[in-house]
View (tube, one colour):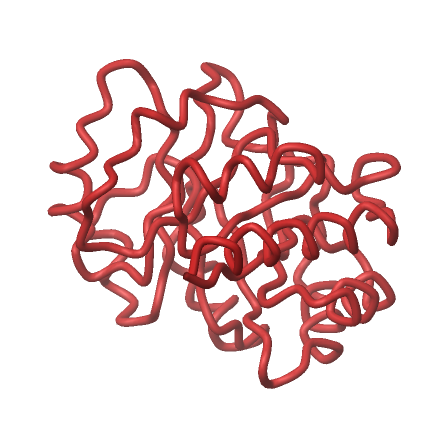
Length: 210
């Protein structure tokens, strides 16, 4: 198998260049004001310009209004949107633009029902549940809750680090792993060594499963 690596919470063009040099396949830009990794629209445009055509630019939004979503599509020109709040399937698909749907793993989440509701999504991202936070918690959830057989692209997030990403790839066989805080020196500041280790260990674990 193969696994893509997404580094989320990129806050400067310099970080974007660094994580791409480390082998990241996708970069996440957080346009959510309550996040410690928040960037504004102009910063996002500047970072987008530093992302190579063969890497994915993903803009993360949380309960944004439709007008702002359209502005992001028009001005940032991402490859994917990532809806990380309480957005309905109808809201997500109205833009006719590729999107990732993030699902927080609360106890009564019905993964099969969610996969059916968001069948048109590029992928489903699974993150830890926290009552007061929309992701970025640095917390893990029980990977065994995720289905082994599935008909959607699975993106694994939540508490991943260079130390556990290899185990995560073996346990879940995700299509993509997504990390933010687990490769940081401080909030919003990626650590080059940790990014490199994360990418290398994720890729090595996937290669070993072939």
